[in-house]
Length: 399
Ligand SMILES: Cc1ncc(COP(=O)(O)O)c(C=O)c1O
Image (cartoon, rainbow, N blue to C red):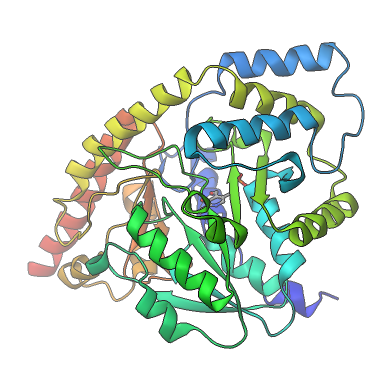
């Protein structure tokens, strides 16, 4: 019964692992889940209040423009003008049901059977499945800890084929927390322009950078690069609004924006109206809570990273953005006698009751991903459970 298209899709590993953890929790087991990339903060109060007011004023009762209400589009433009010094107009904006949906619509809009899409690995799990669903092929470009998990122009050159249509560039990166510098983005941007490869810049973690790291919007670097880029962003991560499902694309490419609007109009009609009013307030209202949450994530990173980096065999650089640690545990496997990360992850859940996601799903089978978006006490508890688990396995092996 199922289509080939559906059969080729792999389950989302993060959601699957989160589900396993939930099942154990329902059985009364004290599981700490580090699986989902979801802030534990509530949506800011003023945002919820704006949504309630919109409902009471009857603004959420009807369909809206397929690609979003005008005030929201204007707020998105103003926001990026302020933070990135980059200019767009309302015709360059498409609002959809989360960045995930916007990416899906974008791939459906631009990809034809046989098109190649460059994806630096490790990568966010949905890119590959969405590209395949659209009939495209993924050209994975492997990055390692030695280059801070960042792709170089030389690597892109080597991977490039005459069918290459787009490059997905995610900075700050899920799962590694790497952030590309202005110079790196400039070089990649120029390379893409030269080869007529569309840049899909997923900047969903844009506001979540730490220390003296700066997020750079690639479209701000030159007019040529802006013309050749689709910016993907959303409110889920920085504004603690995962449940509201607000995502958007910004691009000067009229054909792409038009195509995306057509698809959205047949697919969802529009993002739920009340979410649009909430997003309007989030982007145009005070940014104080957003900054407070960013600082809290930074504090969690500092504390959690210090605990995790000394676990025997764990190798990781300190992330500069997003809210994940992605340690390479190849040496831990050797020390403990495990032959695969998947088995290690399974036993960690069963025995130590800590749920993490195997790096397999992100294109790197030597790593695990741990989200530090949750409560600090639970993070500390998770770190000590993981350490005890590893030390116990090592001592079992030695005895
Ligand atoms: C890199 C990246 N892009 C996009 C998304 C999707 O975000 P949204 O919740 O807006 O669909 C996520 C969510 O985990 C992500 O990590």
